[in-house]
Image (tube, rainbow, N blue to C red; front, side, top):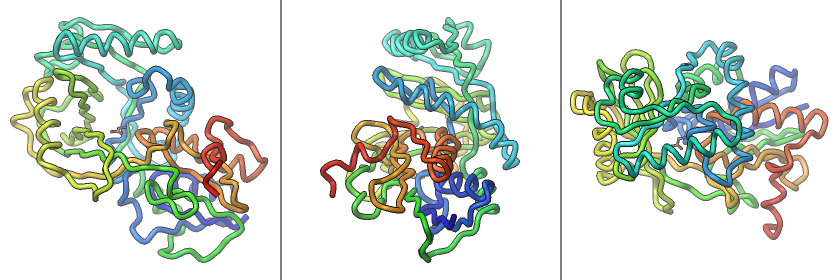
Length: 331
Ligand code: GLY
């Protein structure tokens, strides 16, 4: 089949790569490849740390996609850090957040080990000031920029559409009509640092109620994120956003003061009305969507690729992601 994938972010590129692997004639269209939300993303593969009550479908789908990452990372030759995520709370109120998260996860059969202050310090000595936490051993992380670079080397890319049998729309927050109203932008501001003393694993925590995460990379790189704010202006890093992130991170990780501040980036996450992505037939002939991944684009990329390819080949559909649920009343 001749397939055009609109959007060279991690979702569009992973879809395109899967279709190429299955022998389809694929072109990716993007005048500015890999510079959208994937460029900002920290790359947490966190189906358990980043879900909440009412998001059990995301937990199930995210866990399925996490299981696909080792094979994808191996094939692309990118590092997959598999040290789990440490959830931490700075004060007693923050620790209640950790307890609630652990309660949710254990109820659904996921591994989550509660730790006292000493248990956290044993695993991450630099987290000197936290009250306690929990280890989520299943979780991992990748560098989305490295993933996109590897994918861009494997799929044909053009700047403008040429026409095909099927179009897959994977353009993040900028969906074309008639789909444009299906997602809204949720700004995420994120900082990149370099340090001699990074944590080993992803740390996700709350500091006096402020959520924050630290995702280590090889070579002393550390990604600190992220704000989350609905807005209709251009995504820029604000002084207030950066201050909030730095203040929260410093409470958990005092060594922040010595880290080099390398970069600030802001992008919009594409959020849907019901919090679930739109993957599958759009209701418009010949057009599929792979969109609306909000906080989970990196995590859900391999599952999305499989779902899109399976749908093209045999009509398979994941019912809760069927985009037509959101199209009622749009056309
Ligand atoms: N998944 C991380 C974020 O959305 O900030």
